[in-house]
Length: 352
Image (cartoon, rainbow, N blue to C red):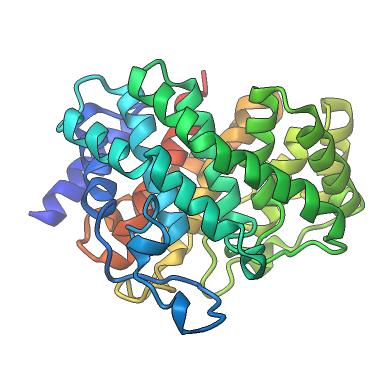
């Protein structure tokens, strides 16, 4: 049955630019299932003493589900996005109720208590920070009454994270170019989008200044080094994504010609990443890599169709290759991959 559903899931995608209600219902079912599932859980906590040995739900009453803090955050984003785009989504009221329970004022206040610990200033820096601003952005975009209330509840934590960005970026003397959580370029993309949307000039200026300092002189990104063994982000494409955001066309395209000349070639091929064991929580990252490559390729061709429309088949290939893995029943991928697939669908749907 899972194999049949996977084939149907992929098949309906291939024929459509946008998600169908059937696909949306399935993508929603995965974060709904784990949003309030406390265990298994990876806390990534620094313990000062035995008094800090508390359960995930006590430490993070808003974002304790879906295995770890950041996966919970982008699971919340997935549901807010789907509710806004699919009025007839299955179990709509149940989804809203879970969001309201998790994102209450009291729960967000407790999240702030955790972040304000002196020894937790680097907690979820910058991957989780980046996703939190994506969630805030989505809540503020939504016209749903419940979303406006939850946006107000979340904003104090968002404001704290923005302060952390402004404090941290000047201290980061060298970029982190891995394909996992600490990738510097990815950690700035959603933050930039929210800064633009919310009119936060200070955050925009900080991201622009420091992204230029860190990346402007880069040339000839080694695409052939990718992927590393457990990547879920492409170091090359994430750098493209942040520079595309902060540079005007007359600066970005010349920079890109030096940084990634292969993207301009209609003959360039990029092999999809393959997973040998989807029960391994690290190896399954590579399905996420396919999705994140896809959303960055879609994002690039959406802004510059004349130069990069030839990349669409490549992006489609990456997206469709890993879609069946979302329905394989393994929690190692299920607790987060739906969000990554949805991000790819989000960018694909914006291409005219």
